[in-house]
Length: 539
Ligand code: NAD
Image (cartoon, rainbow, N blue to C red; front, side):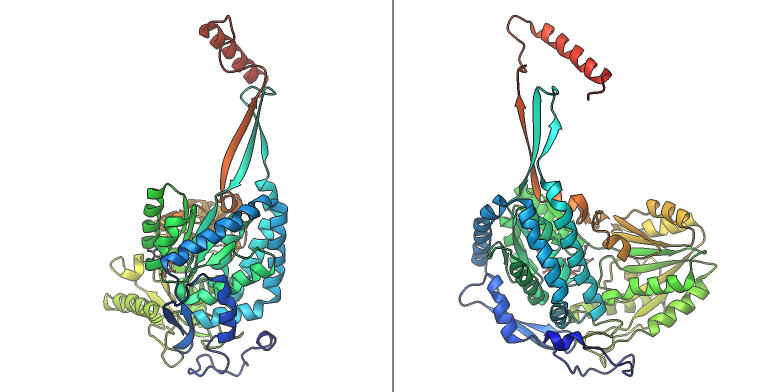
């Protein structure tokens, strides 16, 4: 499958929107699925569930569903394996991540085939996720061991108090991941958790379980002990709470609505969680922006993964003086996107993942049109291309009472607004409950950087829409406001999976007043010592 897939590229002669007739695999290979299921915990006679391949609307595969007892079993196995794993040094654990980096790149074609079949995404979108896995594993393998090593700290009495900070693993981390970026989200949050010495129980979205199993398979091939990372299979509302109930830490990626529920459950158990939630991100195109480049960036940001990208763009804010020129270039690019249900390279935009997603996108556009929005291009489903395809759509005259204005659409729909001053642009970009990502496009980098700092979002890109921050793995990434809690990537993305422990040794002088001295005399001595330490700048 993989050798053939490596060279599979759409011929240029295929028109932009071909009717649905996928000539290459639309269903998953049953033997492959059976082999990968060894990483999942399911009972002897499980309930079965058919998943649908978005390119065709036909069966992708049949999956066994885990029960609550299976979740219990998965945690027990991870806990057992975790004890030995935590005994290894961070450097030994990092070697697994480095081998995983190589395997992901070497076996990319097969991984992307599975992800395309399960999600209906274009190959170029699958590659972005794959690259994220390679970058994240290499980054944490290189810098993580040092972050995890024990540190000496200046104690209360220098020399006499020796304090050391240790970073212990939390235990077993529960990861609940969505369907939109299944290659990356199945493992990139697990990699730092594993490096820190934890076990992992992963509940990937039911629709994209096989992609997740394939990634766990690569980790095991890279040397991860069997049983340390276990997959449980099922839909979120049923199986998710069982995972949260047993985890020592929860990493969730999904909607704000579900994120709140997870946070409440974690709060009751007094365990911490990290939540990567929704967004309503804006790209600001200043009057001095390079228009060709801006049109390319806005098109990619709005239609990457058919708009099902949390850090993608749903609002394009354009300076009023350039809006006509920008739109000419932007719309030309959008209309040239190739929409072809094809497992391989060549499509510009893929399908939506499901009928539910198609329904939501259609509802947002229809509601906007009914309330007076103008469709500049697109605006309807494309059943002739594939059952869940929706045309890349650009709207104008969008107003606050339309759902598309404030709610996350999570589809291929960009609304164009105009602004007059930088202050207007900042106010418009910030006029949302979300705060995930933002972008400023300008030839004046200094002005762009100044504007970026005023946008209330966890990541802001200048002259790019999401790739620059996403790919900068050593810096944290995540949401402000309703877009989340905690961060992935950077120091934060690793250390959140640890319990800090301070151990201090006290020598000679103790904390009680020495024999023969009153408490007052003792306090006087201490006060003199504190002042001396400040004067000498020891502390
Ligand atoms: P969703 O919240 O409905 O589902 C997300 C995942 O949570 C699914 O796999 C689902 O099965 C599971 N789930 C549902 N109910 C659950 C429960 N009660 N307990 C535990 N798990 C449960 O969101 P969706 O619409 O399927 O996914 C898209 C959303 O994810 C968007 O809002 C998008 O912005 C967000 N997202 C955010 C990021 C990020 O990094 N910030 C990345 C990708 C997606």
